[in-house]
Amino acid sequence: MGIKKEYIEIGQGTVLSQSAKAFLLATENKQSISHIIITIPKDNEELAKRALFADESVYNLLKKIPYSFIPGGNSRQESVYNALRHIKALIENLSSEVQQKAIVLIHDAARPFVSEQIITDTIACTQKYGAAVPYIPAVDTQKIITEDGTIQTHLKRSSIAAVQTPQGFLFLPLLECHEQAILIKKEFTDDTEIWDAYPDITGNRKVHIVPGNIQNKKITYAKDIAQNMTHIGIGTDLHKLVEGRTFFLGGISIPAEKGELGHSDGDVLLHAITDALLGASGLGDIGSYFPPEDIKWKDADSAKLLQTVWKDIQNNGWHLINLDCVVEVERPKFLPWRQKVIDSIASILQVSSSQIFVKAKTNEKLDSVGNGDAVKAYAVCLLER
Image (cartoon, rainbow, N blue to C red):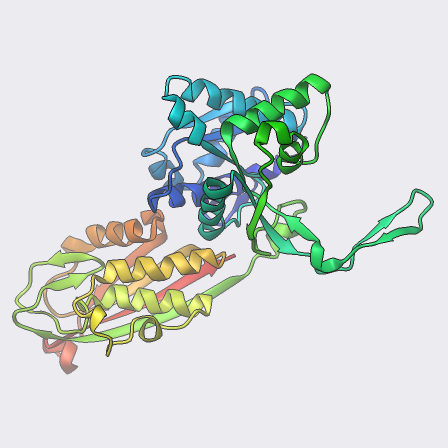
């Protein structure tokens, strides 16, 4: 028996872990995701757990949000219904008002490239209209054909869309729609079709669309994973050291006689990392994102600047494979602070510390770095999508 596609290795984890991670990161960024439910085949929980926690960062993120594995069914529709029944038990003690406003997102775990932007857009649209789905416009001209192999209807391409997941719905009406579908023993293609089949239950609310992304593809064949792109990026930064400034490195304040002179807080390591990530993703450079002549970036927290850039990079479908950095500094000594700096960078990027490494060199009393008048950093990253 072949391995389930959701358990196939990809990036730093598996298809399942990468799918879950997108929603967990959305939760980190203040979205209202309160529980994650994963439907799995019967007696498959140990395999599912190994796949989910193959990425260490997912394990850390799940410390902050509850999750459940529940048995699926013989069809997608049955699996979703089982999950909805589980949610009903989870929220039955909440107030009626909370239950009425509760929404559910239904996502194919075989879509590991879903972006945080798609998730947040779907949540916002569902909260506004009651039902939402991401879509991409049809590229090819579509036709309806007959059983004898002829074209029956010519469809207007501008009116056709391919829908993706997550699909978002008000929870209580969707549960009732599924219950009605069970009663009549009818199989539907997806949950938007179930929703539209019962306008009396949904209050005739239509499913609204939000922009999807061609990167948000469903893993169907091995080549869907094999065709991932990998890009290398390099970044560097140099700052003068002066008295009266705090010495920052990788988001950590380190006691020192001098600190970096810069428009922001001067963290050369985070600046080098930011440029490396932007270069690998092809989205620009730190100067174009945060122009030094703009007063609003005066004394800015470089960790927050990096988080802003990293969010955009992730929304373009990229994830980090690894990051290797070199710091050139004469004083202070870096080794006692290395692990704290590594952990800080990993926390900023929401990745595992094992994906980050930082080492330091002195310049043997040569040039401005060797004389203790400057600090320089280099960063090389590998991104994949």
